[in-house]
Length: 464
Image (spheres, rainbow, N blue to C red):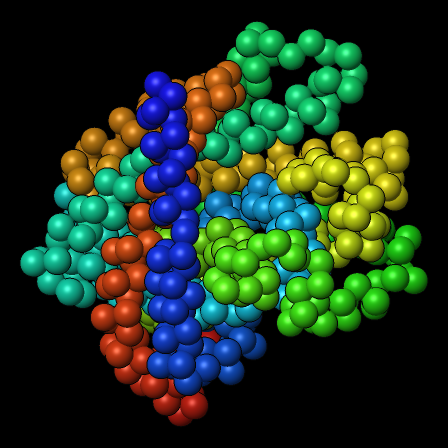
């Protein structure tokens, strides 16, 4: 058992290692250059599309542009934004935040391409319903001979979408912030109660399918981002005297790595290690190139693939440039990253407790619970999509039974072996996603040019 535990731990580290980052970041840079930064010139148009200015209820699909984005965001905005950023700063200092931003910019380009392809090459499942996602744009865009790559993605998705890690971290946060400080004994029974509550809430949402998930996400995601924003603003106002100092330090330390451990010589130098740290945390947070978001965006009601790509591009901006930056600034201005030995979510909790001693940690806990719960809804949908592709649409509901069972397992056991397996397999989803996206990139560029011409000639009429 100890051997297997170490084996899966090494597998997870390897899966999220340098080769994957080269594929995600290198591939993203290629896509950014290939499009000549054109999508970024249409950010205003993307916001108009998101607001429903171009919605047409007769278009094919199941959910609106806004619901598609919030469904995708509900999966990515989670513990990575709270604990992951804290880990990056505690290891690499303020400079890690700058490289996290760079990862977001590259991720925006990747999300644009993958989600455009999700609409451009939608396919039909065994029930004849229109579906989108990497497995479909691989088979529809590259041809049936590439189906093994789509099967590899779907099998990886079946395991990678299981919520064991997310539930495990949420249970730990509830125990550390709420139960233990208030004298409640943490036991198998208390963890089981948490698991049952999570199962009931999750089942209520996911059994309604993508439409119910989209409806819940469209209300939950904006609310949780606004709440988190307000809480961070309170912290920044309390420490406004040092805010600009740390903003400047993010940029200067990004190229000097003054706060990175000097004994770290990975990649031939401290700066290289710092860049890798920031980019890795950004990629882990926004999931650009993994292939999850295109499954949500592939369900959008539209007959214009570029529109959905532009909306999807806003995801990493909100997830990493906004939410992760808020976390980073709270940790930096309060000084807890230098004055405490806390790490992960505990470091973020210390920052909240610094300014709001009585209710700060509880306010953060509310955000953590909402962030984590919303992730549970979206990942169940991703798993059922993979199940449907592999075994038929009539079998996809069976995945939800395994899904809710894994919630109970995640809440009641540590299962580090299973967590490492799921974490590693999740990373493997990027291989087929990025391979197909890079090959099909010229078709997206061609579609983008045609769309911009139609837009300029005002041939695309606003519905509203």
